[in-house]
Image (cartoon, helix red, strand yellow):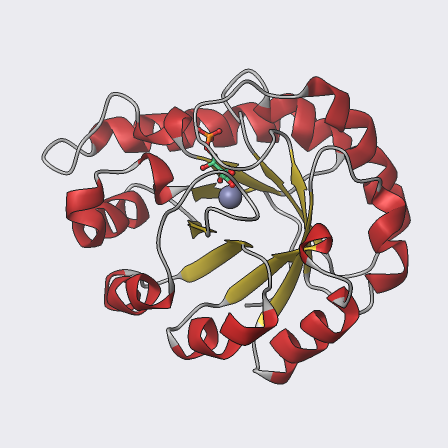
Length: 230
Ligand code: DX5
Ligand code: ZN
């Protein structure tokens, strides 16, 4: 996964048809998705329950590109090996998930995976300022994690811009997650984000039987973001 800062669209399958995940993953990749975003929720760190490593392993054969696994679980460390062997390419842990994020990031890289660290809306960028040489990505939550379809928190734009200046030329992606649409994509791109997670905005108006709508949405979000950064 060579590093580049071009705009990447990562549809979140939280908004997909749960009964058809394999076909949904193939459909969004065929329609232009750069990464497939998989939201893992434990009903403890966030007030919702989704899926675990077994689901990621089942998805792997249906994802040709990057499986971007977002762990909204606490604790994290006991599950890292399972997600790594399930085929995750990027494993992102929340800085708020426990007292030992440094050890968690070391472990993710030790498993040969790309390491991501995520920040809840209430957590300042400074929480990861000294971790930037240990990560491949920082995920800025632009909603309070736990559900798709929520409204974008515009108050996070200043945080993205501060993070972008902190990162400078380091090969670290800025991912934004939550409430990304054709309207908000230009704002986050201008602030410095390059990886845009989008669930409801990609999956609305399309289906496995008629995936063209996914492509229209992915292209529109990408075009809006790219237009903002020229
Ligand atoms: C929320 C998840 C997001 C969510 C995004 O906790 O981390 O990935 O699925 O969905 P939308 O784009 O609908 O806000
Ligand atoms: Zn997510």
